[in-house]
Length: 402
Image 1 (tube, rainbow, N blue to C red):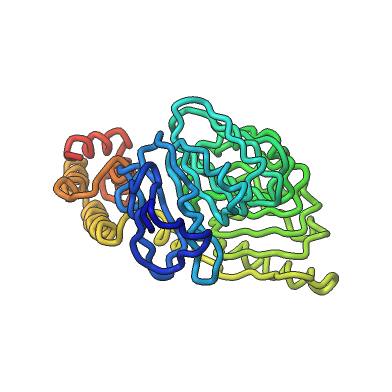
Image 2 (spheres, rainbow, N blue to C red):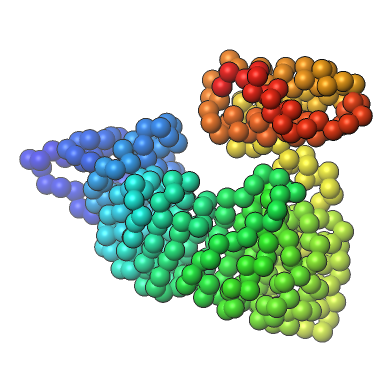
């Protein structure tokens, strides 16, 4: 980037990889490193470490226009995908003149906040809400765009023009036997015609009782664990239905419930129900051919879900995940031979202390390990009576130093 004595580069003129000093929060406050083939940029507090490309304190004002001079080799605005963690909302103003292809915002709020995006050119907006307790009210853009909201949905509300599609990914519990999660009131967003609900495959199920608040749906996509699937039958106007990574399709209506359906996908679903869906799909094609994509694929047996999704280490770095899984395997094998609570305690203690001297065990990892201890306590053993969750937790807390 030139100094003050030189002419500023024109918009989109910088397309080469390399390091560029930028005035992000003040004169030459940061160095932006552009790498070959990378179209995304992450900005956030230093606590994010390497997860953020540029470190900025949550409450610091950002001059987003410093990115106006950058473009991809093909000439489109760079970065294409922005991830920002903080409280600065001025990117909504910036987006009035410079379109943003995908914006992921994790707001860090010190007070209840209203954000105005009515004039913003956003093609995709993803909002990730933590558990800060402060609410965010968003005035929606007056253009077609995709909206995604994840985390604590009770803290979010929106007004204005409806997004072309809405994705909701609430923070749910870890366990399949938890009381079903009830989606909070989403206000005006209930008017949307296209809805995606996302959940973990083996976590707390989301009740589809919430669908009765979405009377206009023509497209519904479900990912993960849900219950009350029979309530989908009331949405007879659906033209698109997608079911992905669903270990339980109990209560799912037959496909003929949706006479307007012209697109259907079932991918990575439980085997028995999946076979029935395949047959229904073929039968429907005889009387009314599918006008769009229709498929049922990757049917899964019960043990596949346990292998792929039951352990809580999937988001860990590969090195740590490998160590955790190895320790878990040893503990599970030892527990399978345990004939007394003392032997069970020894197995769980050995698993717990394995992580005492490992770097990278922070709050999230500690919670994951606590969940792993609960899973281990529920695994097969020879004691003759169940290991109480409170007992296993006491063994875990007594042995850990993280």
